[in-house]
Image (tube, rainbow, N blue to C red; front, side):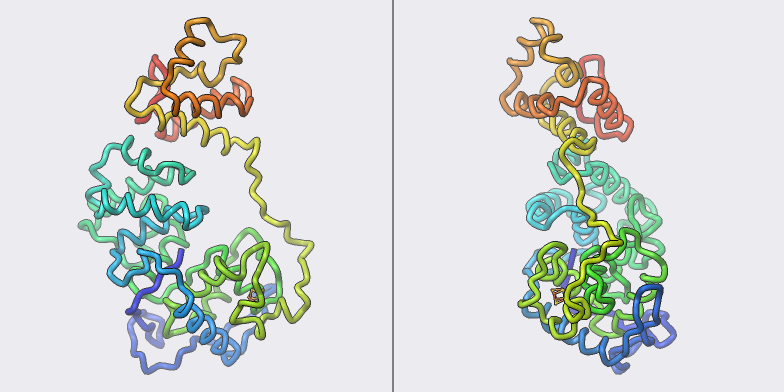
Amino acid sequence: MTHRRTTEVTPAADGSGGGSAAQPNRRAEPQPAAGLPHISPDHAATVHRLVVDWFQENARPLPWRDPEASAWSILVCEVMSQQTPVSRVLPRWSDWMERWPTPADLAAAPASDVLIAWDSLGYPRRALRLQETAAAIVERHDSIVPDDEATLRTLPGVGAYTAAAVTSFAYGRHAVVLDVNVRRVLGRVFAGVEHRPASLTAAERRWASALVPDREHVVWNAGTMELGALVCTARNPDCAACPLLEHCAWVAAGKPSDPTVARRTQAWAGTDRQLRGAIMRVVRTAYGSAPVPLRFLTAPTAHLTAAEADALSALPAPLQTAVSAVRELDAGGERTARLADDLVRDGLAVSTENGLRLP
Ligand code: SF4
């Protein structure tokens, strides 16, 4: 996710974090890493300027980019945005921040409310982890979101990306914010490759780190991310609209596709993830009603008793639709029951003698 903050901390020459805006807007010369080329300071500076100017003209006016947005709201946004598009995050984030504007508010909420509010953002364990993070911030950090990456990474579910993003976008500190969009833009512009490997290596991190300027580093982080989200997309980059067209190594090389890097398309139909999501939707939809008998999800229609069939058809329409969605996946009772067990084990559902319900 990308943000725009008006203040940023310029790193000192010793890399300690503080410093003066009088320093030149460049860091140590980017060092070559395996498969990643040496970048001259002038080349890097040209690209910085173009990205910063483009972002200032083209950034989407998203509420978490407001300079007054709290660090907590930015942390929530970053967690929600993992593998989820902005269009789906925006309404959920707005509701969430209205309801739980501080970590203490979320920490005190019932888990069932948190899971309902998460709605269909996917990967609902993130919602519970975020609530654990809220509790940790309240208990260990006096309700203040930490401002350094190392401390942020001690929070439940906060990894390298989220810690760097909060450090940069919420506190204006110098950080290397590397998500899939940033990696793709850097890889195309500077290394001439269409896609980056799935795993981020320490060498690539060091290489990208050296490309983060001393000044305007927050806008650089946000701008490269926004460029990757809006223009330099994975499948259909709009090079004609890109400010980096004349400086892009991948375009200059004729846009070669890289046969050694498999396109990372996430299969969905038929996956456990799809089925888990459908079961979770049933549990969420049943909130406030009776638990949903597991057999409604696992038993073939021919094996339902007359009483079960009657009870199934008497469910409220939205719940009937959710149950039908699981049944239509035709995943088999054993697999469906196993994934329902997983949801229970993950704390996302509770198994009672009458069926499944939210915690
Ligand atoms: S010119 Fe095309 S490939 Fe290169 S950074 Fe811009 S959109 Fe991406």
